[in-house]
Image: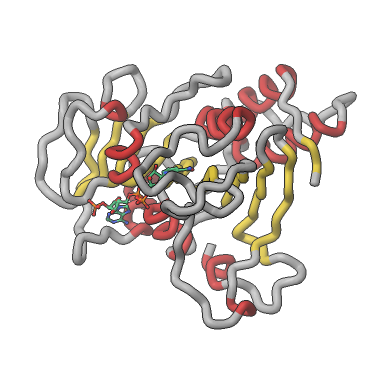
Length: 270
Ligand SMILES: NC(=O)c1ccc[n+]([C@@H]2O[C@H](COP(=O)([O-])OP(=O)(O)OC[C@H]3O[C@@H](n4cnc5c(N)ncnc54)[C@H](OP(=O)(O)O)[C@@H]3O)[C@@H](O)[C@H]2O)c1
């Protein structure tokens, strides 16, 4: 595990990379600064190809909220700062409508310097009220992906997609977002939404930040189709970073781990 420390000079180099500057080879940086660069540069760099990352902040027992839906502060302060850094480095943040309803999510960048990303809510049946905080007019793009005909407040962009049994194909969502100029995105949750993109082979990276608390019950961060044999489990190449209050697993879903018995299905599709 490497300690990652995002100092001002690292962060400004990352914001410049996000805005198109040539990748800067870190010189005279401390090992924790170099580790921070290695962690965030793949998210900041624009290659012309889509980059979709999912991030989960969870407890030691794999929960992202209590059974009653209290999800505030599952992550520690450094895990939250990490989430805000990732938001600042992508073009858009995607959530499912249940997260939008439960968490009153604002999805803005408040804990670090950087731009607010576009906010994308997947709301097939049009359940999100017009006065939801994530639809607030604050200068950031607001996008709703829906299957029904439902008018939205002025300025909110609507991507209309077909649904089968209420489910919209995640690859169609990804294409529609790229067509809207949002190909560098963070899938922030919840677990249902992340699982759709993961099982569709649409994620390049998965970040799991673990904070030292035990909740006992409640929704888990990720629920995918179970495998019968561990040999069939998804085993991405993973680097582990100490952020301070939280430990981060940075999983590259395009590469199976060297120890994997067989390449994962998801890794083969990305
Ligand atoms: N700690 C963290 O990192 C974190 C982050 C985010 C959320 N959370 C927690 O996660 C919980 C919510 O997660 P969740 O898994 O229950 O729900 P969710 O992923 O937030 O939302 C799921 C809903 O979004 C819609 N949806 C998503 N993908 C779709 C697709 N491909 N096609 C059609 N509809 C799609 C569906 O809406 P309909 O229901 O209308 O069909 C689906 O039921 C909350 O407790 C929240 O606090 C934690």
